[in-house]
Structures are given as structure tokens and as C-alpha cells.
Image (cartoon, rainbow, N blue to C red; front, side, top):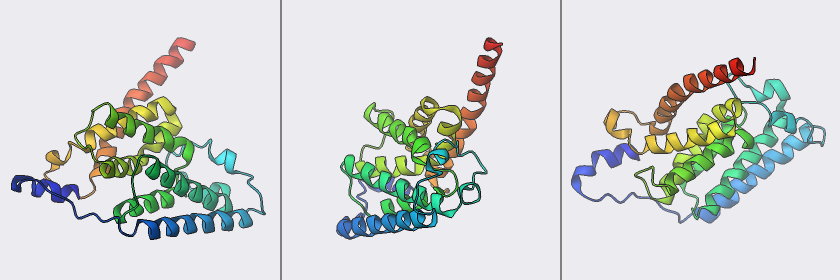
Amino acid sequence: MLFVETDLADFGDYLPYLTTEYSSFLLFFLCGLCGLLFLTGYLLNHRSFQGLAHLFDVSGKLVTDFVTIFALGVTLMNMAIMGMLLLVFIYLLGGQLSGPLLGAVLTVVGFSAFGNHWKNSMPILIGVVLATRLGFTTETSTFQLLLTAIFGTSLAPISGYYGPIAGIFAGIAHAALVSNITYLHGGLNLYNNGFSSGFVAAAMVPLLDEINQIKRRMNQ
């Protein structure tokens, strides 16, 4: 989408072909999928929630394979929780499900078996919303906000490893960067959110490591 917008910028206003005609169907589909995942996980986990609380305390830093660490049942329940969290997030911000948003949600649901959970993802979502509300981004549409926030959870390990405040700042930085970085690569990178996340992580991680080292030296 960002690739197309960049190419058509010289031809006047661009209106994306985005339909929400099937939002009700997509809502039922996603709720059904998450319900099925949660029920299957609950049954595989011997009808208990044991292990979920421990999973939420994991940073998500690579490599974090939840299936290997916590078994399949707990992982499936976490995937369902993340799907429902993002669904609530979309509707709280006044959005409606569409093809791109469904794809974004399913992407995060998949990565919820490999590092994402609500505890390390929420600060990123909050940071993106704050960046938009404070005018740090050039994108103002609800659709772009939601897409940026959902894909921005690729930075969840920063939140899990360095704390929620770092996660909020990572979300703010991601939102500010993703709306401007298209001009840097000229539309030649189709994965704009992933490209932006890499820049944010590369810039923030050394800085956060240095801050942690300073704190450790001060506490000695």
C-alpha cells in the first residue's frame, strides 16, 4: 500500500481501494478462530491455564519458541489471547476489519508462538497511538494507525526485555519513522513496517544497553 502511495503521489490525491463490506464476516471468522485456538489449547493443557502466567513474563527476545518452552497447549491459548486483544484494539479505535488488517492480525497471531504476548505487545500499541495523537506522524487515517500499530508489535521484545517504558518509546519511534521512511527507499522495499522496525531496534538497543550498564555501575 505504501509502495503504491509513493508511486502515485505525483498524480494528485490517492484514494486506496479498501473495502469494509465484509467486516462482519471477518469479525465472526476471527472470533471463531481465536475461540477454537483457545479451546484446543485449554484441552491440550489438561483443562488448565497453568504456564500462561509464566509465558507472559518471558521477554520474547529471539529465540523464544513457546511451543518448545511451554508446550503446544499454552502456546495456542496465547495465540488466541493476542488475536482477541488486537481485535478489541481495532474496534476501540473505531476501525473495521478489512483484508489488510485481518492479515496483520493473523501475522501477529502466528508470531505469538514465537515471542509475542499481550504483556510485551501492549506498550508498543500504546506508543503508536500516542505518536499519532501527539502529531509525530504524517499519517492520520485510522487504517494506517492500526496497521502501523499491529505490525509494530515486531518490536515487542524491546518492551519485554527493557521494560514497558522502553516499549512505549519504541512504538512512538516506529510510528514516526514508518510514515516517513518510504521516501528513503523510494518504494523499493515492500515491507515498510518491518524495515522501520529494524531501524528502530538498531538505534534503540545499543542505547538501552548503555543505560542499563550505567545503572549497574551506579548501583555497585
